[in-house]
Image (cartoon, rainbow, N blue to C red):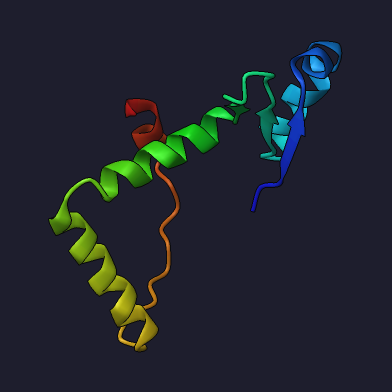
Length: 95
């Protein structure tokens, strides 16, 4: 799970490289507090991709229903444990 910190634009400028390292390496979410009250958030690309994937998975009622049914089945012990296969290096290069 990621941690959340807050900073001002001035502190962000002073500590940009260490903040970016925290965001990318430790998955820290940084809230940049603005005087206007409309804050910004700095997250890693991996975190953004995760949010986008979740939004896509939850984008239709059919998808939500299928995911909820799968969760219910797992919680009721109806799931099947499967061993993961090694990734095919050739398949990685096709992505």
